[in-house]
Length: 367
Image 1 (spheres, helix red, strand yellow):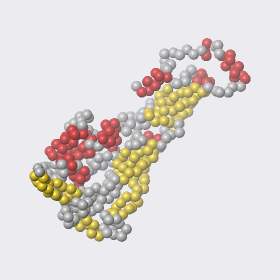
Image 2 (cartoon, one colour):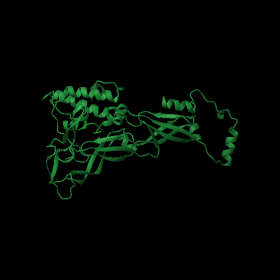
Image 3 (cartoon, rainbow, N blue to C red):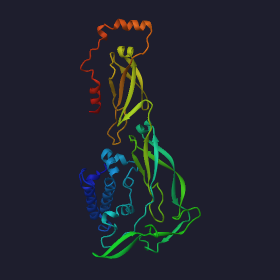
Image 4 (cartoon, rainbow, N blue to C red):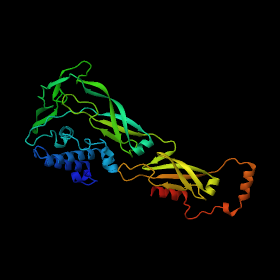
């Protein structure tokens, strides 16, 4: 079972952003590869800390994690592709944690790795696809390295991707580092530009990407497919493909969290005499029994006929809301029948304790 991100960093769920950053910095220094050469255990702990920080330092990702746990980032949903990250990812994304330069502790600096830009797509899903999970194939136009493009070491920064400036101030000599303007921080410049490519040696290519989507996703949820964004120039790493979920409405069913709601209309004879009705459910029809004397407003609960939890904690329910249909027009015989029943004691309302009011029903739904 995957370790809780808060436990990885040794913090509580109420930790502030400053406390999260401080905890990560402490872990990263302790298990930094420069301090633990050829130590696989330390490297794994270093990566785990970086993955935890990547989620918890981002307000949107932290909110999703707090709500859905690791399931929110399944199938490349977030982080570094479920643990398959490389050290360049960490050094390029979190160098700021150490105040510039995530390098060795002997004063050296590590070459900055440039990452390609992310792409964002919206995928529409039916309720059936959300309940069952689905794999979507979509066509994406992304920038890739053009065949024949070659790069050479940047002469301005000598391949480091950064330039260092020293300025005299009233506080003394101050040294600052910034990405190299000549190569954009890549450490390399384009030496051969193939026809049809841009100034970075990249060209557009249409690609079909397979996106596995787990059951129980929510409208607006964002998944991530690692390395399917735009390429970076030179030896940089690819950006990611961000997949935003859009839930299509259903004709008969309404979603509320993991539960589904269905409005069932029954005639007065059916409500009085009872019987059975066939209703729509995800994946097909379901027949339910109607007890004699069924009251309007009654809610019939079909257990585990809702949507699977994104956290893997079972499924929601299908809630059937009963509405007794009253006819608006009657013929003479029908009118005479109901006229004769007006004073009949069986037609006089006598609600029992088990016949809940509308407010009690709503309260029970949300309790």
